[in-house]
Image (tube, rainbow, N blue to C red):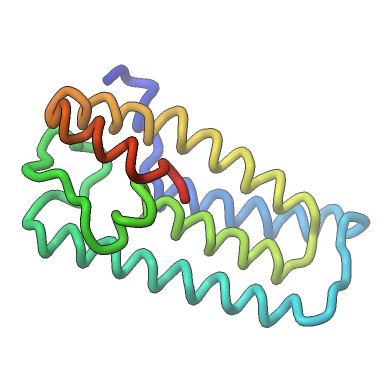
Length: 153
């Protein structure tokens, strides 16, 4: 993997995105909107994202493999159970759900642009390098898994 890849750890990237969503809502209130029940949607998305993240982490611990996104080469086993049956990247999906909940909470359309940039950056600089390593390490098994489970959902 080259130095541009994996530069910002995903949780740090998510915190930066949260700050941007919040700042944009304060600095550009013209993009704010009102929708009834938005607070409930925001709470639901954040809670579901947290539960998905916990489920994904438990799946990794049960498989006795690394959770570190910076060292996919240390992965000892291809985790296909638990949260990994519905997404190849449930931890990143969970972060995206939390960001979406926060964007709904602040009710500013610009937050969704931040989420799009977050997903694009994460896919290009985190997920694709991980996929290359896993494809080399687990070959046919990983190819089969990719055919069965989508990258995001």
